[in-house]
Length: 294
Image 1 (cartoon, rainbow, N blue to C red):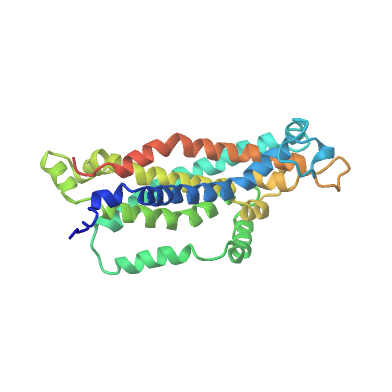
Image 2: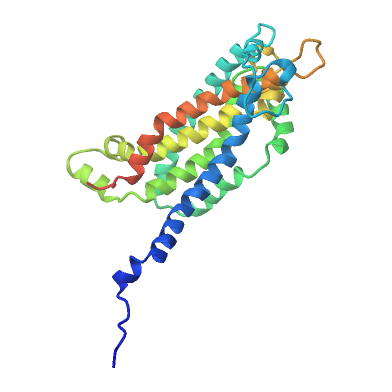
């Protein structure tokens, strides 16, 4: 009488069918990531392709521009557009906004994370609520306020509203980040002779670099892409930011829309954001994966 032995787990796992199933499940996450990347990059790809077409071919549906042309980039930097000055204005507004938001938000978040006082959660809730107001609902009060204090056609009229919209998110993100850091870090620094301010500056702030850099990137992108406030509070062409100038490009006859020049300007405006993320990506990922206590 013969008996049939059941296959061992090792034999089952090395069977062709099991190997095929493992190969399928191994590729499935990568396929999903590829679809997401393709979906996210397709608008930028089409904008890049359209910017490299000739004006007569701007509505062509070929995936590659034939022939290549840089006339749209030349048109974007034409003197009558003022695009180069608008880029400098965007750098100025976004840079100052980011620095001020980090300075105020870091100190505020550290105080909310480390100090215990009555109503702290209420304060955090109010901070988040202030970021939920639609920008358009605040436009009329801002115009009235800035008109009364003489801020129309000034840089601060764009910087201050951008700060008010970016600060709540910055404070909330950094507060959560500081809460995850053990208080023993400050205690050890103070035992070694540091004051509370020195412990924050020399110990906590370097370890908080991932959260600070992430907040800085989010703030810079939000200030760089801000449109409705900059459109409403600035009328002088020399003070307008890049998104506003791009929307006001005029064609050869004044009434036609220069889609090619707008696509080229859109590519140029997007490049600094891509470079910014690529430059700090490695440091952010390395900081997030590193331990807080060594």
